[in-house]
Length: 375
Image: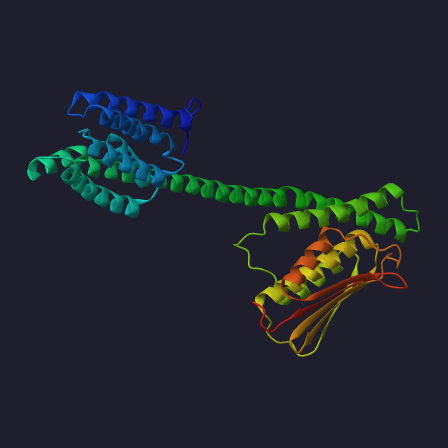
């Protein structure tokens, strides 16, 4: 709950309440019927102990409930006739903390103990003794304290639920804003970058057809246009990757391969074995492996060809992506976030992933995903 800028610390509030209740008990105790001598001193100590125990009601509500109840029975046994204000405050604190059943049982037990204490330690008619015990803990005050604690507990629970709802609403609005930005990026940037890319490629094509030397600046513009298109597409896919978009799987790999053919990367797809249904998690992981592998080839490998192999095996699905890029056997390539993500996906499904350069150049990514018992 919102505490406000100048909220008083809870510890100070608890000690203030404890001091106030203690002062009330010590002032009202001697004002009514009370013993003399050592019994008066003991009763006064119990009155003070019951009030001061309230300082710990937030940290140990049940312990404070027990201490204040014992103090109430103790100072009644010494001869004081004082309403157990400290116990009522402890009931409020325990119920507010959610200990309703324990508090109810303890209160019923204390009512019985007070009756027995009056009969054992005091002299006089039983009716008067019962009335004296009732003055120590009146049922009406007890019910009021219980109801107040429950009311505050429910209010705090509703406030916490409202806070969580506001946070969920804020996250949903943030997701909606993210999708809106993705659409605006698509509308405003994709067309312009596509125009730059097409114009530069046309200019390069015309220059080569005429036998002219293509300026380095024009080649740089052409490559920058291609890279910008790939980066923008990847960014938009990340922004639009939400629950409303159906997840990609094995059925989408042919379209994925076709898209990479438009990036001047000669990409082929081969399927071996007898295609059969695989778990959704395996299908999604296979798509992500191929997507990440081809993306790495297009961005970093300076390759001209790439091949994708999907092999349906009994109880497993194998994926292999090869390229003819500039990777060499040594030194070993550094695993980036893409390779790390692939490894985590495969490991989570109980599969195996191997990534390594070819001896004659190029790079290979091989994954084997179990299809039996995979959720």
